[in-house]
Length: 415
Image (tube, rainbow, N blue to C red; front, top):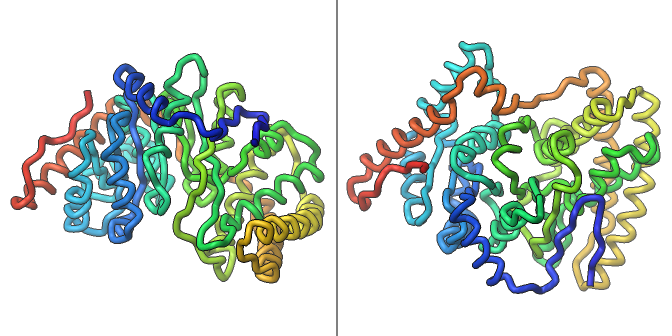
């Protein structure tokens, strides 16, 4: 049995009665509403994972609201998305994040001096979704749309620690084993982030922020839950460093005793390619992660970073990553998993080169790409969230009207 606790509270799966937790969460959610937020590209509707997610969510009586932040290229695609999620029994809002109505709201915000239009991708989708979900929900769980192993225990495990008031938890992060098709996955976590944090500790010492990052068993998991208050006070990174950048925001805003991680078990989703340069694939992800961590070290630990640190970091990283590759080899073979040790070495050597180029890029331009928190946006337009809700209601009504063959359903509403 694994009982080990970390700097943050670690909630293990020790075989407890999940049904009891579900019954309790249903009771709690009647007084403290919950929401699930899923950022999604339209393409995910054409893959089997999202249908599985929808079907499991339909069985979650402890979820009051489902928010889908959809990036769609046309109204026809948006209509199909609204139809796709119509079977859900919860209040379901499909927010067309790049549609005309939401774009108009963002343009108005820009005219008032806060321009969020240059921000693209998952970061903006998460920011919009958190604003909308926080109108009603006391706790919001977020996960991606490509999880192939999804079941209803995922949102259950993420939300329950936040709603049980005597726990005092404000942020709950998922961790899990990335195993699929008899192989270890999660290359960026295993072969980049883990040896990187250890190497940073050797270069800069046991800084509080590095100890905090090291406490997360899967720091790059895209599945987490947070209170609505924290959602409104969190800056959202807009690049591929979103997950680790979000952890920096939690570190800035939340006492460690209010942070937890929970075991979701075996977990799998689609995989990214390694990429041809630091501008694509996993190399781009590693670049953004490294720059986010370096920036936070400077912000929170007053660390002054120079070229010598980057060179030392590269050397330390190589040795740490090679040691881990050997350990993964032993673990994989013991568990009868396929393990291509040569390919693992090639991958970590690629990641080593990312440290060189990304480190230099950071020294040249240490500024970040974070979307301002919702409290600042509400200072500009106090009813901004209500405007978003009105836009979603209008968009969904138009989508439903475009499908006369589908059963009529009331427009979504909060409250």
